[in-house]
Each structure stands twice: as structure tokens, then as C-alpha cells.
Length: 477
Image 1 (cartoon, rainbow, N blue to C red):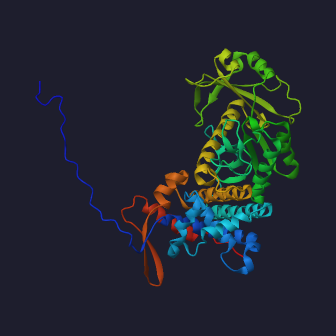
Image 2: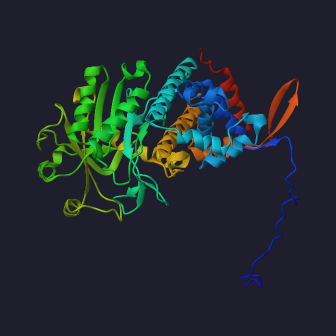
């Protein structure tokens, strides 16, 4: 037996270089990559559009431009800021970000937000979106297709979902939630193709999840955000969970076709007793293997169509009902029906006809792709609407709208300026690798130079993004 058996061999670990910390540095800037977002807000016309709709809020034409203040707030949220005081990150670096409003000025502006201001902010974002999509088309990118089941989905895909936002202090219209918490229950709509946040409405915590009027309002707001050429010339699939299965909402989705908008729906459906009976009546030969998102067969999961078995009175003509059954994973919470059958069942409704390639297998995996909205909401809570800054509901509603703009800025950054892994990166990765990088600011040849460290791993990605930004077509007028 070796004499050293059972003992530890301790190796000397090299110490880190010793540092002396002081606060007298100059010529160094932090969050240098965030200038990319500020410039993108200008290049897409978002800043100018905000200025146009908010011009009346500028007292006697003096002081900070309200549109610029709003754009700066959106940039701060996209950068990961959580409060209005985080404007200091931009304000205290004027050589990079220019003149930025003080915290009290930003507060006063938000305090003047009413329904007219909110409508103006939405309209400005729609103007910028049209410009961003034109820039994507002119640079050869275009709007990518959403994918499901290993296939590109035609047209645009809109995902609606609600989420709970906890309030840790009393705020206007904050209320107890159905999960026993306290706060707000906003309803949102994201574009699955790009991750853009099209629309949202701030609601009290006790707002109903399946309120048809709220779904209709948010969907209409989202459609207004789409450029005309896409809103009227493209298939638009509307997806939601079972909260979107109300007859009034689905009738509205179908009714939009009379306005020249080719809308279709795919929404979850509660399992009622007639649906349970229909599931039990489906013979084994009519169950088909379900698909994974890459198009391969999903082990242990099967799909069947129930159309015509349970009656669907009051639903739009052509509504199909499809069910998936699957062996539940360990620890899954099952309903009594699932427990009896030993399988988990999920049901959804859609009006996509089978003649358009809408097999039950494909439609089921397409609907299951709606789950990606949870990722968008998670990232959105980290980009502004995870906490609301004020006791006043109107200010928080404006904050939510600015959060949507910040999500859009990040989505346009990925679409227009990045490629490879970063073109699909979530906000935290973009901040860590690009936005929060430090750099030196030098002057020479009558120009300011932002010098990124030659050892920064993603320096070439950031430099390329700035070059692509400079080459984007500028808005006119």
C-alpha cells in the first residue's frame, strides 16, 4: 500500500494580480455596447416617432425632448435597468449617450401618461416596426418564419398569454391573484417569428384569465402593430392556451377575415365531460404518433382528431378538435380523468383545414410550440415588466409600454445586426457579451473612437454589429 494513499496533494495556486482601486479614472466607459441600442432606436425612427406623438408634453419647447426621454428609458430597460434611477448609467456618460434627462424629469413625464399618451406610444412603435421590417427586407434578412415540427410555418404567428407580476407594496389596482399572491395580471401578445412584443394591457391581479374582451383588445392592438403589407397579405395564426377558447374571442378571430386579415386560431380547450366521453370512444387504430419539434416521432405520445364527436355549438364553422395523450413524467399533477386513464390528455381547437396540410399530427406539434411564449414572458420580466415602479396605475401602464419597446429593440438588434449564436440569444446573454462591455473613449481626427479591448471574446461581434448599424437605410422625413 502506497504511503501516500488516502492523503491530499496540495498544489500552489497562482494568486490573481494585485489591484489598487481608485475612482479617478477617465476616458473609460461602461455599458459601451448599449450605444448600439440607442442608435438603433434612432435608425428605426423610434425616437423621432416618440418625439412626434409627445411633442405637446414639452413645456414651451424647452428642456429635454419627451420622445428622447422615452427612448432613453426603453434603452435602459433593454440594457437590464429596473428603475427610473438607472437612467444614471446613460446620463453619467454624456460623451457616449449625449444629454440624458434627470430622474425627476423622467418621473414628471411618466406622470403625464394617460390613454392618449399610451395610444401615441403604441402608434410610434408601429411606425418604427414598419421601418425595421423594411430594413430587414432591404438587407436581405426579411422576417423569419416560425418553425414547428421541423417545418416553416406560413405567415406570422401571434402568441397570447397572461402572466402574474407580484407587487411587494400597495399600488393602484394591484389585487390578490388566483395563485394566492398580490399584484398585476397583464395580458401580452408576442410575435413568434422574431420575439417582438406586439401588445400588452396592464390588468389588476384578479382579472380573469379567460376574459374575451381583454383578448380581443390585445389582439387588435397587436394586429395594428403589423405593417399593412403583412397584416393584409399574410396568413396570421393566433395561438393561446385554454383561456383563449371563449366563443366570443374565436368569433372575433374569424370575423377579422371580413376585414381582409387572414386569421386562423389554435387555442387550448378545457376537457369537459363530453370531450372525455369522445376520447374514450376513439378506437386505438385512430391514434397516431405525435411529433417532436424537429419532426421526429415523440416517444410515448399519440394524437387523435375528435372533430364531430363532441358537439361544439356556438363555435365558428370548421372548428376542429384534436387531442394528444402522453405518458406523464414522474411527479406531474394529473386530473382525475388523467389518473383513471393513466395518461395525460391535452385538447385544443383550430380552424386550419386539413386541405391546407393540416394533419392532426402537424397541427398538434404546431400548437404545442405555443409554449415558447413562456420564454418570451420570462425574458420580458427581465426587460422591464417584472416590476412596476409607481403606485399610480397610469405610470405603470406607460412603463409596460416602454418595456414592450425595449423588447422590440433587442429583437431588432438580433434581426438586423447579429448573426450566429447571438442572433438567437436571450437578453441576459446579449448583455453579458455585448451590451455591458467596457471600452476606452479617445479623440483623434476630429472624431470620437470607442475602443473595445482587443482581448474581449466577442469584440468582433460587437464591432460588426456597429458596422451593420451604420449601413442600415435611414428613415426619411
